[in-house]
Amino acid sequence: MAKVISPMVSGGPVGLMPVGVTVFLAILMLLPIGSGVANVTMPHLVLISVFYWLSSRPLLMPYGACAAIGFALDLWLDVPLGLNMLLLLLARLFVLGQLKHYKGRNRVVHWAVFSVMAIALYILSWLIMSVVGGVFWPIKPLALQWLVTAFSYAPVAFLLGRLRRWVL
Amino acid sequence: MQTARLSGSGQVARRANRGRETLWFYLLLAFVFLILEAFGPGVPSQIRAFANDLVAPVLHTLERPVRAAQGGLERLAGVGDIYVENQDLREENERLRQWREAAMQLGRENDRLRQILKVPKREVPPAATARVIGVGGGTFERSVLVGAGSSDNVIAGYPVVDENGLLGRVIHVGRWTSRVLLITDLNSRIPVRVERTGALAIAEGQNEPFLRLRFMPRGSSVQVGDRILTSGHGSAFPPDLPVARVSEIAADYVYLEPLGFLGKLDFVRIMAYTAVPDEDTILPEDNGEDGDG
Image (tube, rainbow over all chains, first blue to last red; front, top):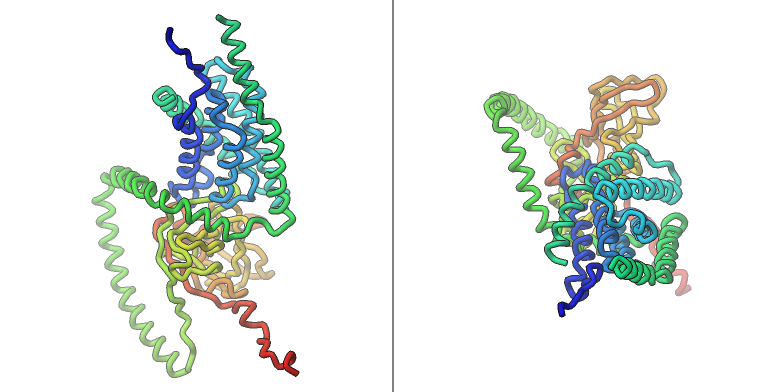
């Protein structure tokens, strides 16, 4: 009798792949592609990766991993400590709460859900930054980065999907 | 079968949700960090600098193929324009040769006059030349990470320039990396003067590709194309560094286009400029006379 392995669980070192890939994407976000404007035009690859892995392998992206990746990203991006940590934790909370509604649906639905979640998180980050900085930050760069991130979801999720089928 | 799958899915959801207690712990931690950033001292810059040092080797490695790919694409795109560009460069080279001769002559004359008048030199020596290895800030900050740190004698506050003009100043210094706050950042304020008229003002970053000129004296004139230089006031930057050019004059604001090539930074020069003395050096020295009585 063939041993049945749950498709949602992959133990061992391979199970660290989602976290490893997300950390790699975090480092990729720091690369100077177009330097001065890269801050805006670089999509939030970490948010895409976290959403993707939580939607497909939630057990492999625990709260601790989200917090640690967010913490590292805050240090590397030089934004207030706790900002990305909070956003990634809320992303996990959102996905676990809503996964039952869109699990198994086609990719366009996943894309739409991600875009809605991302816009909510970007608005929240704008509010937090405004409170922390004591000044209203410009909306335009934020809207532009949300657009870039939302449009980047499809190709990045496609690549992550290929990787998941290959490794996990 | 369907029931089994659903119960399996439910089990996974339950397992994934099991860490609710840890969620509250991490959320609390994030809030504490944010409150410290908003009302407290924030995270010490040494920790951020250490984190940058940790990731620097990976960035150095990944940055090479990215640069190579960018360069290759640019070469590919520029093949068609090579002949015209070559012609333009020849003409520009000829003009620059003439300017170089004039500049050298003026430099020699300037040196002689300074010697005669005993005026100290104003040249700022470079602390290091470094490559941009990373960017930061997301949508909220305009900063770059450069591959030179305290091991290259870089100190926080040093101005950073490229061949065209001012780019920003060093804000965090690690052992092998430094973070440079660009002049376009919302927190950047540079005391400047209009080259043509000498009128003093402040160039403010907007988190956009342009800067804004503020606090111009009443009645001072400014035209599109005017060059804006550092004034040297506040001693954060040396005087006469090119900063920007007036690009647009609106009803309320004057917009500036940075002269530094912020859109495509590669190598930058960090200038060893510290006009403001450290607090330690300006505090009166305690020579122990009071204590010894």
